[in-house]
Length: 254
Image (tube, rainbow, N blue to C red):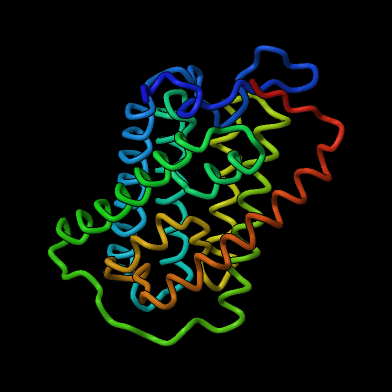
């Protein structure tokens, strides 16, 4: 099946009062090859994870006794890198770099199954590569320890952090110009990384990549799996909030 077939295309989305406007987190041309768009998602997620893991290693070296300073350094690094990547690459693929965004669009019938699978595979592979690359840059071994499951508070923290992030993402796709979405997401991430005990991973690709990550952001496989489940729950909460908040707006798909 060719990339240009409907199975692999994002659907054409319009909103009330904004005919012809490309919403935040949707690509400008959904007819581009799905391989090209998935490649961009892999590259963007890889660079994002390099920033996540690299900032964690740097913060643990330069501010080991100052957890708040370390959290601020990580928050600014992650938010800054994500905003830059979405602005730079988002009009090719939509700038998701997060399987939850892709999956939520599929749930809303805004993205085809083939495109969704290609994006998520690219994001997970890119994230793992970024984590390994960051560890190699700092000449530190990958994390391999297996710890206990996170506390209930940690699990709940990821539900809340993800629900907040996805509420911002889905809301921006409905109510703002394309260019404002990246900055809204970056602003939320700075706040959530500092304000939540789990430091707001809120991204399954980053969470799985953290299995290989040394430093502050490294996670055990069990913790990573638990966080992914929490993130899925948070995404469904955000989808529900979005449907209630924008119940009067029609989403039209081809």
